[in-house]
Picture 1: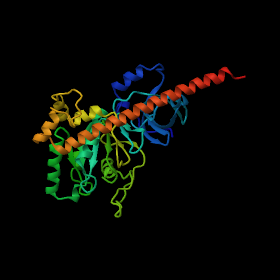
Picture 2 (picture 1 turned 30 degrees about the horizontal axis):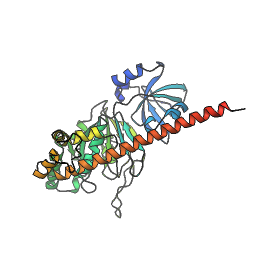
Picture 3 (picture 1 turned 60 degrees about the vertical axis):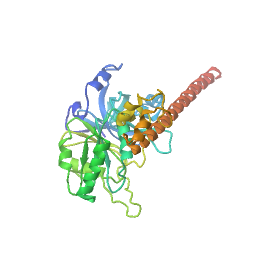
Picture 4 (picture 1 turned 45 degrees about the vertical axis):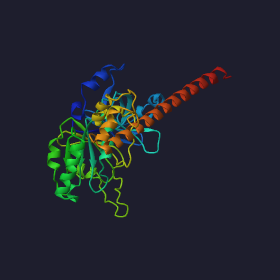
Length: 361
């Protein structure tokens, strides 16, 4: 790719002290930083102060990677060498400040949705997948990655003003400490306020199911029809997967926006900290349980169960809390077991190679 474009500062695309400190700690100070703004089947598109480049990772990075999480993702900062015109090599992946990770439904592998995100806009629409439990799932993922979650209720033109107020009351009651926006790309309502809160140099991402209007909102934010939008199938009432890859956009306001493909299901893994934050009232109350290892399911003198029985805590929220704890525990254990298995297999291969060299004629 290697094309000359408008010169910028790295800070304009999210660079800061965290990344600079890590860059200074590397062995080779001649490497220069760049940010991954798109990925296409192993081919990465990078941006630095002066240009965009296409690049691949080194064979060494592939060999030393123990999981998919060790590969670069959209939003990552990497260190590169420019070999020649059009030839850029990714040498190192800088530590991530924040990361959004999910477990794919029906699979044991985890997947990085995007990294180095400051704020995650979690979108639902009232005509499709509106569900408070699903919001809690997404919020737990964001909180676990040290990302600030913001709720967006889109397509509000499809319901009455009174229904909007009812849903807003539900959301404010369930998520007291979370910012909430209501938007409509048809009427434009709420979009102006939304735009005002996009800050220069801050990285945002949109996550949610297909068909909730993510791409339409992004089109309005960038003021260009760069992302394809599609009709909802009248037969299945499911949105078509329009965004097929992740990409980072620089908005006119200076904000940085990562678009993600729609996700029908999203599993939690390594999300204990996020669950504690989202369900803080449950976590705080658990400290009053009789047993320190209380599962909050059938133990005597469980403070959470007592609060549920007295009506102090919401039963639906409690059910989701328990389900997410169980799912996270299972997925995290499975992930650790898989890593241990991969580690042992890698050790076996290295030993086998040594034996082959030893007896080679």
